[in-house]
Length: 251
Length: 272
Picture 1 (cartoon, rainbow over the protein chains, first blue to last red):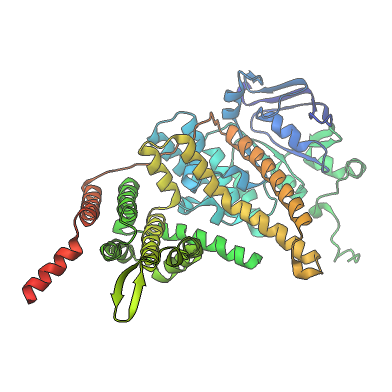
Picture 2 (picture 1 turned 180 degrees about the horizontal axis):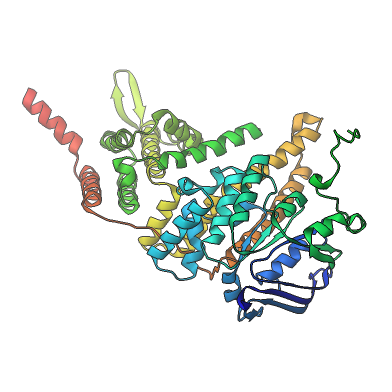
């Protein structure tokens, strides 16, 4: 199915202050794949994500989402296809009730009120926060906010989910629950994160970024087994793949 | 200091919690409540500046609302007290400026200034009280929606909605800054100097601009085209008509006729 493909070709991007954030990135993500984008701070992960929904326009290179090459004309279609979950849910939840927030996208797509209500109900039920419908977003816990933020994207029925640090700021249980929730989604998933243990749980493929370039792209297990690569890119093995400090007597 | 701000945020948020209640009044269409409150406010403020007696019957409305919607009186009175310094400052000079004697109770001469000051206080209590009650029974978002349905330009209602939504986050940001400052300022009891204050303010502006950009990004990625749409089923049924007609009529009646004097005369005639 060609319409769920994300293809980035030789993508370069320079910010107006001349910072070269991306220096020629290429990859191709197929339908249903779950891909992690990892890298040190400032490696260019967030800049890359902002290209995937057309917020930034490449200085050079091409981005292709499904059947559309990303251009100002197709940006609307692309944004419908790509659901973007931002790192800080407070940025994403800007309406004054959970319901209004989740309804925001579908209403902009021009659906009828009945359809909108049905979509909102089903999105909230999927992430398990149906009971919070009438609450103002700022009164929710971070875990709940994150779920609502995901619902606000699911209600637009995207094919591709792009997430920036979905587990940041969550307590361990909320984190595990979120990972289970994301596991249950059949969407193509692109997740930028520092939570490498989540990557092991969720993504079969990992793209390692370093200084605006792709350092490695391959199966998660292979990438995380390559200690030299991880050290070069300022990363460390997921805790789960490191030796147990108690058993090995290093503790 | 930050503890006080924390408390203030909690209290603003508490009004929203009250608005989530479920009573006959809460369920009324926001438009009916908004219009009734508007008529109430106009009637109250349009009285002559020495009027006291004719304002008193208007307390019936807040009393009924508080009763029907089961609102905490103490909390609302505290909110009123919080705003009261403004009106006290406006009115406090009346007794000095206006010394004409309007009434004489035994040896005590009452000047027009005191009467108008009292009248101002009553009006303040009634109007701000009515506004608070409107928010506590309706919720800010629903009021904005009602305003829009009644013809307020969308630009204003959207601004109000976003302002209200991000007020809390802005205050939290300020609280965090003040906390960080007071933790590292060992001298002067954590007082913020003018120079530091300017820098903090500048910093806050930059952070706000950043956040605005991120919010805009989030809106764009959800197909935002410059217009905020909201689904709301508004129903203006017979209950709403009854509420608006009943109270609106009563207020106009109280405004246009001197009901208190009429009643007084009636009682005098009966007893006399």
